[in-house]
Length: 334
Ligand code: AVI
Image (cartoon, rainbow, N blue to C red):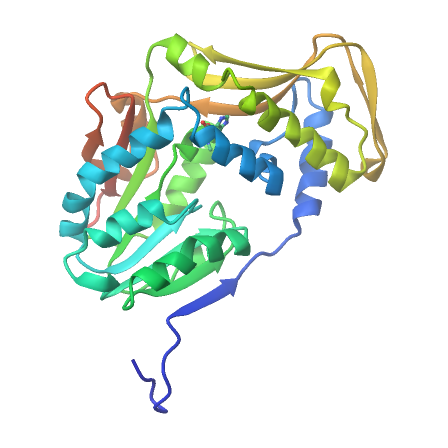
């Protein structure tokens, strides 16, 4: 394709909208989290280079059914999803690998990515590059607009034009508290038009032993992933957490329908965080909450969506309904 001056239009472009620094956010969150009654560290800080590598390992674990199930559900659903989408902007919030986007692009009515602009949104430019390189090679007509930004606050930068299919895979919506999930879903609803669709991956409520095994794998990868968050705080804020003196604990909270992941102090200790001029005292057995992972039913997910102005149009799931993709539209338009 040529532009007005006769030069070829580049097929990919990246725009960086990251505003505040990662370290400033971390400092603010650690100060709040270490002075709260239930100490906590937000789960977004798991994903430094080592944490992202450990998470990829988790996705391949026999106990961690989610990634495989979601992919097989998408395999069965992509034809129907792409038939109604046709072409336009394919927005992926927090892309991991290029696997899911390529399933969708393969199922598009037109070949080679014709008519599709893939718009991945992620805080990591290298994650965006990894997610898009292979796609550009595989689909010679695909265009890419990478948005380097935080999908919890930067969705306003997604161009308002034509038709959109927004995807949020991996069950990550479950890592948000209800108010945070509401804010995020509302901001997605805010960029959707009448014919646009939003496909969200949801991990569903299932037998507790299956859920708990997925977060307590025999190889100890999830434990290493959990403890790595302390290494992140040490590196970025000069703290002296000793990961060896914390135990990994993950269990299902039936009332809240969520897995809660903690780091448990195995002895009383004091931890210094020089960048915050803070000393944190731990009693033996005291915990740091590092992650919640909510599990849904169709009813609880429907309530979450409708409170954010979204309506479920279709469900896709495996026969046991252990994982599901909800295809939602913006309610009340049209
Ligand atoms: C990214 N997220 C959906 C994962 C989950 O299952 O909540 C993160 C994870 N934590 C431990 N294992 C995987």
